[in-house]
Length: 203
Image (tube, rainbow, N blue to C red; front, side, top):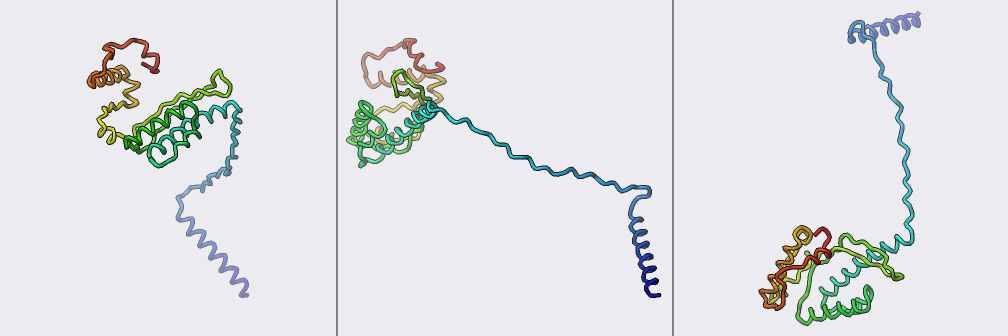
């Protein structure tokens, strides 16, 4: 008897809950179920970089050699006690000898530079001689500061920016010419030949 009453009470309770829930919905509204698309994880794509050839590796090494060269120049120019034989690790022959003279002269004049030159747009090409590469690059020395020492020595400094050089190269030449004339140099041309334009790309 108790079992039947329990089942009847459960049925009544279930019906009441159903009626209560039905009253919360709008009449004649059908529950809609939005389909959930399956989640698919994209498969990782693998890009295989082509292996550079031996010639390409040699060209990149030549370009990096220019940057190493200027790092050594900056370090030797800043440290007056450094050994100039380090020049032979990045240059040879007349180039190493000339830079050794330049740095020795600066040390004699008590000129010490600070800052670093920046090598930009280095492009290497193989020359006709075996194992010789020609590298063209823009050397930005705007952050190298030796101006105070040069001012004390009476040098005239002409600041030329990258923008000046490529946008108004003839104006740069005029500034250099006027400075030479002002300092009393003889034989300075008043007019420029057109051949100079071959040495500046975009002039």
